[in-house]
Amino acid sequence: MKFRQLLPPWKELVFITVVSLGCLGLCLLPSAPVLTEAPAEKTVRAQVLEVDDSDLQTHGLVRYGSQRVTVKAGEKIFRADNQLRGQLELDKVFAPGDQIIVTMPPDAEPDNTVLVAKDHWRNGWSFALFGMFCVLLIIFGSWTGVKALLSFVFSCLAIWKLVIPLTLKGFSASWLIFSVVCLLTAVIIFLVSGLTKKGIAAFGGAVTGVCAGLLMAYGFGEVMHINGASMPYVQALLYSGFEKLDLQDIFIGAMILAGSGAVMDLAMDIAAGIEEVALHNPGLSRRELMMSGVRIGRSVVGTMTTTLLLAYSGGYLTLLMMFAVQGTPATDFLNNPLVAAEVVKTLIGSFSLVLVAPLTAVISGWLFGKKSLKKEQI
Image (cartoon, rainbow, N blue to C red; front, side):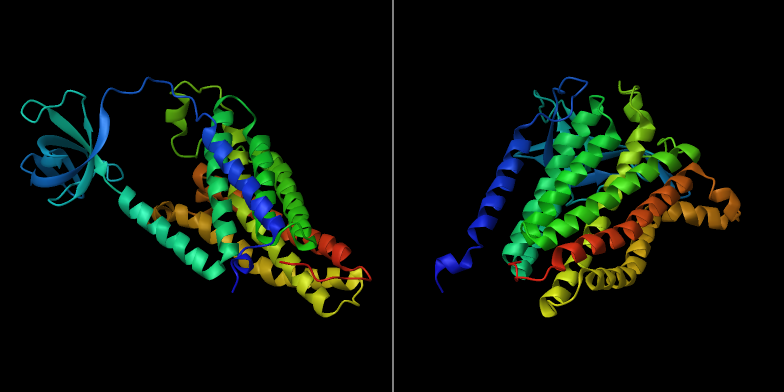
């Protein structure tokens, strides 16, 4: 087999190159503004050699006090302090052999410096897991897997380098995220399918569905008095000097971002299904293809809406368990701000899914229902 046969068509190579350059350009953009100067201490990796739990106290499920830790950072042995404050979500207890991160002053000496033990070192396993994901994706998907991986990286950079910094600078989060979602939809869909009728149909259906969800989020977020304060670390963010942020606008943008992936999936499923039908039966009219797309959408929408429900409820499972053991009536916990926010997310996302199915079917049927249909390269 010639090397040329292993490469994708030149048009795909051009698009891959453009997206790769876009990733590089995003990397060069400045990150979010930092309010404080960089601390003099640096964070380093260390290995736990010994622990002393004599100052730890246990009351029920909660432990608090100070854990003394002996660590090896580089070639030096230091003492470190691990403070437990009785907060299960933040506290950590170390054991000999653990890999942790500690804060080290620039002039730290083993004899007279006590380091602060911050947390477990997780980057190694995170990178290993990401590497396994990349290898599996490339093995299974070949060039499609490479393009999917590239779109994954581009999406991460777009959120970190565009959405977060520009929102902190005062841009409208909802319309900024909508614009970024449209950009990501174009990159992801056209990377996978190419600039084909299938890609155009999926892109058109997805964008119209996301736009409808954005408009509904504005309306129902207002009437249901969802102010966005239910999002994590909101209060800390406001007190950090960003008190002018519009939390409701950020919440609306977060809803659009959270549901955009499912909308993209459904649009591509329907567009690909209609393409296959049209390729095997080129004589079908536009109306017949549209009805085929609607029938395909009916089958997929049922599972996709449940997917959103399961995804959102999974994040607040312990909250629902607490309501259950307290015997809280449904009418009460449904009015809880945290639950109401997730209800709005689920229903707005589901509405976008239900709407994107017929829209994609109409666009696909119109594009593929012509008299002369030539097979396009996927």
